[in-house]
Length: 301
Image (cartoon, rainbow, N blue to C red; front, top):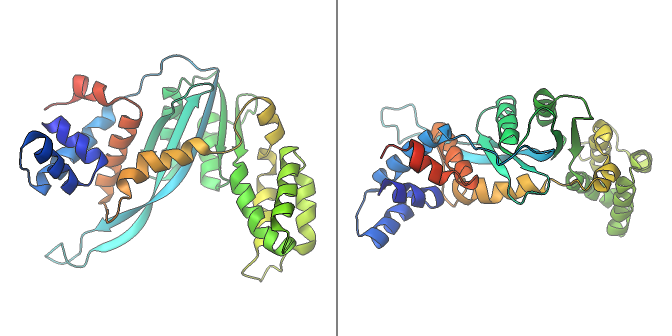
């Protein structure tokens, strides 16, 4: 019964979980029972270590953040009053061997630096070893880039960080409104074509004549220029495509949808930080197909 309840609670609100238990097993449970049993197993399931099928020659990987609604109890005697609501970032890591269909996931509410440790463990779960070539695709956020170098090194013959092509395109799309009003799509396609041929400097030169003044708050052209200039050494799109490697962070982006958002961001959901962390472990373990292993080897029911 606990397995069924945790199964329902992993994918549905705790209220919906109690209704499903009643429907399928004819057992009435309070909402608190659904929450308690699901979170108990969510906290324990993090002990499951994903076992890779084999060592990978090339691992494709990435990290990205998703904002989770957090609730903290009030300071008054009645903790239900004066609750504080905020949003906190959950960092999702994913990795898969080149040619593999399924990715391995890991997530944490902790800092990006701590998430970096999770990142390497996720890569190991996909078959990464020290001789594996690591191809990462992510946005240009400094903490993510630093975490990558800390965990996978700076030797580009062993590990390469590629700036997500679609994030770059978003920045250029905003700049297009200033650069080529009325012809934004054509202008954007031209810049994208240059990027795919590694003509990054040409794109930067195209932007430079219309850079906004430093004091101007709305500055999409300057924003795009800075974004590209900062990570121009990580934009070898031609090389990646020639090697059959991705230039977009689709794996981790889709992971946000089906691993995190499908449960932690359902309508009305808000979480205590420690419960959100536990649910992330539950969701990633299920996504990694280690659910049965937990119940057979570790669960104490």
